[in-house]
Image: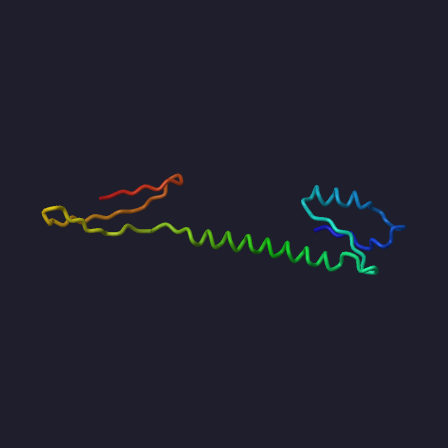
Length: 107
């Protein structure tokens, strides 16, 4: 957020409001002019900053949760398979991730 302060001192203005908006837009920021003397936009500036901080932190927390919930098995699991005659066959399977496509292999 870019804030122009002392907006009540128009006779001493060095940067126009339009130029302030243009610079903020080029930099990807929001823009707000404030005046503590006239109590103009002071509370709005703080609320805007707090909302932006909250959104940034929330996005990071969600991304961390999503990354933590995605886990691939590190080892295969042994399975027992019986055929019609009752003979038991032992084997293992593993899930592999190759180029974002999963496939199962059996031994």
